[in-house]
Image (cartoon, rainbow, N blue to C red; front, side, top):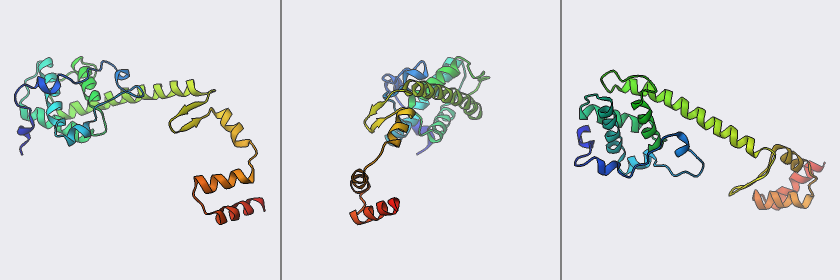
Length: 195
């Protein structure tokens, strides 16, 4: 299979009509948001054609003449180099590139230039994620949070819980039931701790 055969045939709009249209990181990086994984699309052999259409759109919007082969090669490089990113990141990145947020394209789509722009985009993305993490962390400090994994307590509450007295029976239960240790081994551990 040649790279040219990866370019979508027919109407490329059929590939992209149901794609998300993020305008900001918050549109898809919020907790619980559904995203479209590039690796999942790649398994279905849809990633390169979809990303090719997106890069072709960037070329057209930017007034750049780009042949199909170079568009496909650029799309393929992005899909192979960034499998852990959602498709929404590529879409938002291309939206920002088309607005000139990372510099000009100077008449051609160049993979090195686009990868440099991606690094700038990724720095913005990481800064946004760090800010969101710090905000959620600040909101959670001072209160307990119940999740599907159990109850997570604030640092002060955790300290109180860690300092509470534990009975020998509760320690036995934790070690046998939760850690699956044999009763004899648990009693040996507790005896060493007491001694």
